[in-house]
Image 1: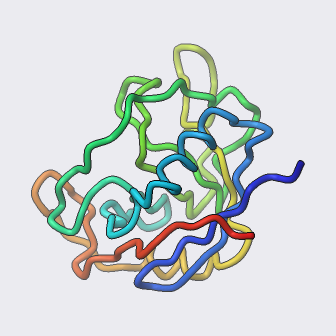
Image 2: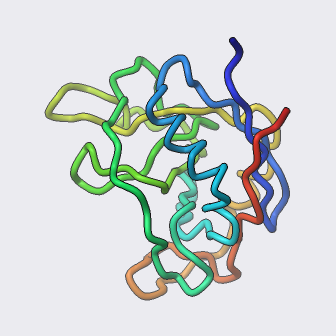
Length: 166
């Protein structure tokens, strides 16, 4: 069985992501649950940090957090690394607090990898397989503090949809 692929359509263009269901089955199932419910429609890339990552999938166009399901267990110990173009789950300081938000590494970020139970890291569950140039375009957005969000793009960058790609 091959891994699922999703098409991410944004106001800056589209990109394809292969989801590693073989390495992060609970994380991929959780993500696809949100995809199938159209949860991501109209959410923003609300945190953009050049030479680090772009984060989205949880805030609406008013910069309010959308209600999410219960957090999932962190599968960061799956052997996958936070390399350029990989997709990982965003979370709070609690390693097992990820729900809907995700980020795309725009450079290799070894500090985000699983180290140990004490330094759990961030679960990689996908890889941009086409359209990394769109991710890089988002990364170059001008940002400014907006409420609690220090790295919000000046001009909002929306996720129009995330759909399964057949």
